[in-house]
Length: 231
Image (tube, rainbow, N blue to C red; front, side):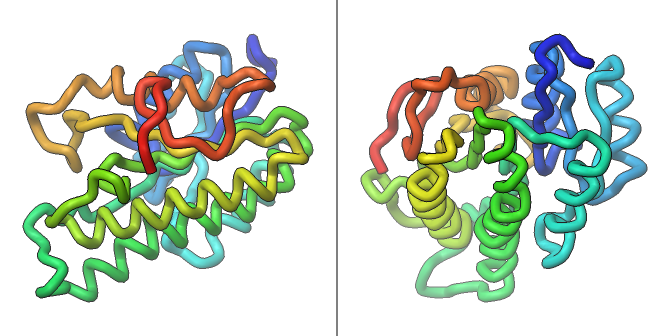
């Protein structure tokens, strides 16, 4: 039994924000399930978190992977208290909306939207059973309609769709006491974000904040560092 007795799942957890979020949750006493595509790599990374983590095979772009992973989590742990949809691809900064690369756009939506949607649907029963479930969709201010401009069309349109999904999930799960929020970690120095961004620990801290909200915390919101962002 962990200090908190709670179990969290982080998708895309083998590096960057996913890894740091896993590390911070483990330090709070969560049992962290690190969703990864490469299970061998995931097991190596999970081993670095002092026994508080384990890897679970979960390629969110695979139509069947989320349901398989949910069955495995229920069988092994019997619960899930926190779900963090972190997996994302294609920050297409050189892309242009009038010269669309349809392959990139489809891949971005498959992971950033449909993948998150599949994972949320598959694990919702366990979050509901928790009685105090938390679902965090890792988004981006690039997906804010208020501030959106040109560039990164696949990434920005997929993230604004993810934000819409957050709103719908929050409404449907409100009566079950599952809090659902979108979090922008800011520009973080990761493989996707590139050099020059804020430390990854700072970006992850905002995600962990949303994952550990009290029962009277917000739901259906968009936040960075615990402060609301405009949709």
